Each structure stands twice: as structure tokens, then as C-alpha cells.
Picture 1: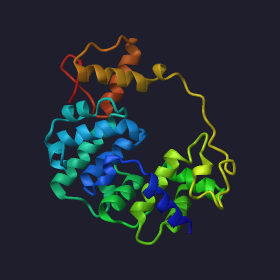
Picture 2: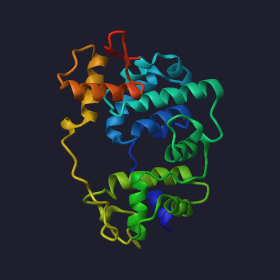
Picture 3: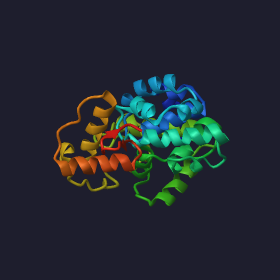
Length: 261
């Protein structure tokens, strides 16, 4: 049975990631927010430092926003720190909601992952890795709702948390976007294969250093470190600062100079 093969494989090879050793919903929420668009290997040290500084939702909610942003620095996509602090404030004041999507910054995937890992919800959590595994195995690409239904059909009864972890591990380490290790896959039998579904078209983007995202990151890093900001053309600097201000990552002083909130 494919489900048992997958779970047995996972137990034998799973990486000892720290968030897998807890059912504390706060620790799991921190890990899930950090893992958004960031590889697990980069997250581990940030995760451990962040939880040491903010071991509970109340600790983060009570801290100044500038402190949360500084603790997040180096992970990228810094607006996640602001959203996580808002979620922490909600939990600290009202407790964990029955519908986890009610928390600021928590979408359907994060709610499903948090629900299964911390609260025992029997729901499939479909991230990019899980989507790729299912699409390759079935040989078909589905819209999000149909994919969610298909994933739910595959969850072994009563074992959603283990299945979610196993599928994420499989997609991250074996069923990779490029050069998948099909010979090591526990689901190889019956799989349509990596070429059965064409990968999404890749758009050729501009160099990272030329993007507003890069400028925002450099400006914020300089503010966190108390250093002089990088030299940027006035229009680009203002665009980057406006974006940081819109995301709640900086505020302006009386003279218009930026600082952490």
C-alpha cells in the first residue's frame, strides 16, 4: 500500500528538524511562517534563536515591532515577522481560534499544517513539494481545489500529520524540481514519472540586485544594523522605503528619515 510505503520510508530517512520534535502550536507556527519561501537548512538556526527570544505568543506580542524585525533579519521576506507578531497578539489575547485562518498572515496551507501537526486535524497540507509529488504520481495538473481534494483522498486514516511530513520530505529531498531521485522514491511503483506533467513555464526575471525587493532588503538590513543605508538613486530609494512603510517594517520621523517601528 502506497501510504504505508511512504510512511515507512519517512521514518527511516527523515531529517531531524527541530520543529518535528514538538506539538507546541506556537513553535510550529513560527516554523511554518519561517519556512515560507525559505529552505529548511536556512531556517534552523533562525528558528532556534527566535524561539529562545520569544518562547510564547505573549513574549512576541509584548515586544516592540523593531525587536521582532531585528530578530527576523537574515531570513528575508521580512513582512512575515510583522504578520507573525500580529498573529501572536491575537493568540495572546484570545487564544488559538477554531478556524486557524482567522490568524493574521495564516492562509489555507499554514492552517492545515498547523492544524495537523499541533492539533491533530486530519487534513492534508499541500505546499509546493506536495503538489509536485501528487502531480507527477498522477500524471495530471489540477487547480488548487481539485488538488486539495485529491490530497485529502491520499491521507491514511488518522495519520495526517505523519503523511504531511512524509510528503514534504519526499518532495524536498527526492521528488525534486530538477534531477529527481526516482530510484530512491517509495512511491515509484505506479508513478507516471517526472516527465508526465510539464513543469510550469519559467519567466526570465531581472537580476536580483536590480529589483525593489533587493533595495528594500538592503535598506532594512542597514536600519537593523545601525549602519548607513546603501547608496541608491533617489527614486528607487523612495520606492523601496514606501514599500517597507506599507509593510509595517519602517516608520518615518518628522524629517522623513526612516527608522524601525
